[in-house]
Length: 262
Image (cartoon, rainbow, N blue to C red; front, top):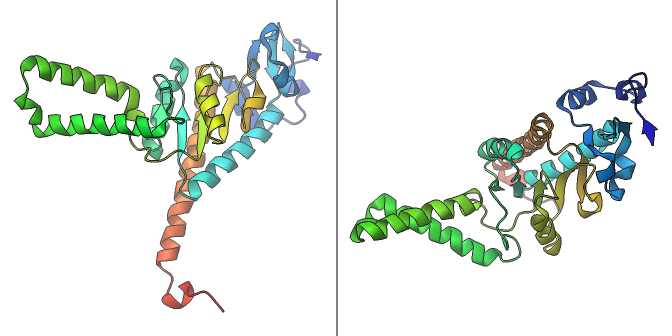
């Protein structure tokens, strides 16, 4: 492994630093964990070590990122759902921003066990939450005592904290995007069990073999996480745009154009 020094730094050693890689460096995408915490599976993606800190090979990050983004876009173009998972503080706000723009489901508080493997039960909880919200909005909760209404309100708050992000998820997602596979390991296991492809950031302490579309990246620092989630969000928005354009083009076809040729 290359030891990176002041005279021999990552910019000098990178084969061809382009604009995107420069942006990654500014965001700290290349900064991994202490060498002692490295996972063996991440070794091919580690460029070297600087002051005991592992440095991620950004040329490989760029390559893997492009593959992952193309997959995400393809899922969205065909109308698929991407479940966004980022429960660490650095990821929550950014995940919420992207989810709001793309209208994709998300988990930002904590992963709810069975969200994928026991989806029917989870769906019932979401339906119950929406029923309580409707009853409150329509004034139906007025028939209860003050104490009972207070309990209903508390239950709505609790249910929203757990399930608000997946109320739009009416079926199992076609893919998961996970910010930290160590933090949300249960989500990884459930996706594997249900054979749902996983796109995820993989820091130097991550087992990259658990992920279908790994993106070697710092998954702790806010700038790095914001950079990567921003790329994922842009890919989903591009996919939605293409899907809409296809739908418009199909609607504008004449009956003769829609008729398959013999």
